[in-house]
Length: 336
Image (cartoon, rainbow, N blue to C red):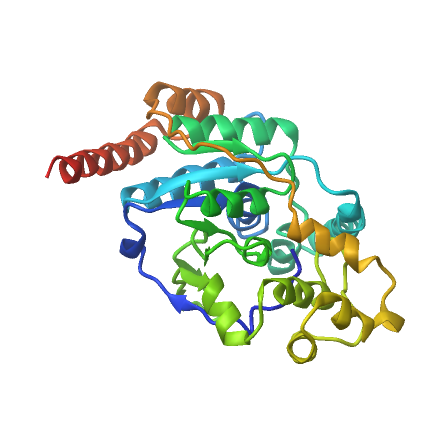
């Protein structure tokens, strides 16, 4: 979500080896949209097969997750279910932004401005039902557990951590942290290198944000963290409270003990029901789920990627060797 608290929460850099043997619950839509945005041609055109089907998301899911599995990380992808009615405005705003980007892309295309095309094309990728179902198929075939959330995927990820079914949540957003996930890992599904405008590359390291460290550092409790999120703005109250940024919000929640006292201070500035939004985070729409990891299915992977979507058989088989080697090493560790 658009929760802007990144500048005020403590975080620490991780090496991928630190996550070896750990189970990470990934917010599926968050990751897939990253792949749709980043796995593209220089002019912004997504990867496609010979039939014109977009395959950027499949490429990202396959190659990035194989790399993580090869590093010994166990992955659970959690897909969004029904979104709350209050999130409708957020979806409308996002759809409008995508349409605006599409128009600008067409203008850049007419002007043959490749750089601008690449910029705007990244902003209007959309997932359809077929893409979602095929993503689930591929993930399960490579040994990734797939869970369908009843509501927000990231909040379900947090519940998996609270239930001990996962060690951390993997997402670029902060919802899971606000609802109490003990660990949030960012930059996990991003490419490890990012190209700068000058042609140089910068390494992107995974970063971990710990729930208790956030509360201790900000000197607040769980309810005041939720209040802070609402003040700044969430997907359920876009824009938050006018005129209040992260630092002002933090000062306010520190000065008052209870949410009702906090929001009484700004009631003249609020045009939404803060109690309704608070309840979404306090009692999220989640389920208690057991995580079961499927077995690697090489034939299914080849059927999806090579037969359906024209991926290179040689490259796919090379990646499969990485998964098999990782599983072999895991078996040896268990043996000893």
